[in-house]
Length: 245
Image 1: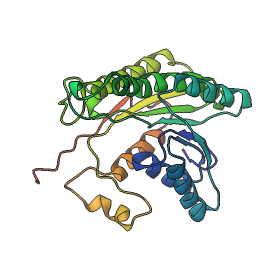
Image 2: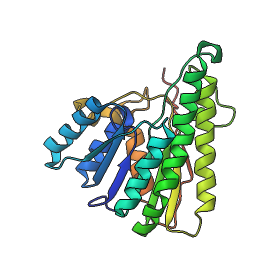
Image 3: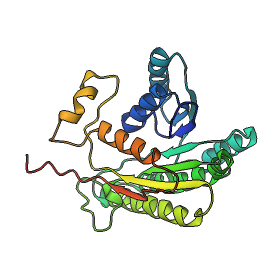
Image 4: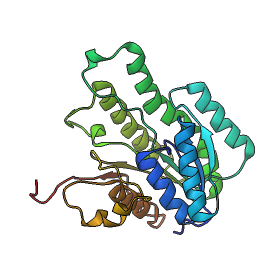
């Protein structure tokens, strides 16, 4: 698979892993629609991409916790009618700490953004992924979404939302079987946040003490590049350092 000319939607693209994915895929010629909550962050990534490639990606402010906003965004895409080749569900609302540390609003927004928003956007874009003839859905979950995973610093609400995301991905994979949309999910651990704009990006493969954004970007690209008869349904990244501290 080549990414050149592929139309892709990346949610949560203003920083971290989403921004890294956007930069790398733009370098590979993808046509990007980037969403996020911070106009400043999205604009900075878009300008960086334009400097590297000569092409500025499309941007859309999108709050995944707002069901109406997500639904209208997906409807606008369907009304425009242009096929979508790849949807990367990367956006997530992080919530650390104990359940009793947070009020009802923080908990409900975390669930709304990570669960309801992901489901509604994916549901809304499926017809356009089918229209492409070879669509891909890649959901960035978390090791918090694995059964019996340690909470570490994550809240119960965040862990619950990530386990729900895993269920969404697995359910869609079964529901869309036989249709031209492949569904995959990746479960990253805590990451060292690197950017392709940073010289350290090119040294990341030499690091053995932490999993980095580059590791996840490379793995996502590997999964998307598999032949269509291969689905890597659940990609779990084990942060084993080979005995190193």
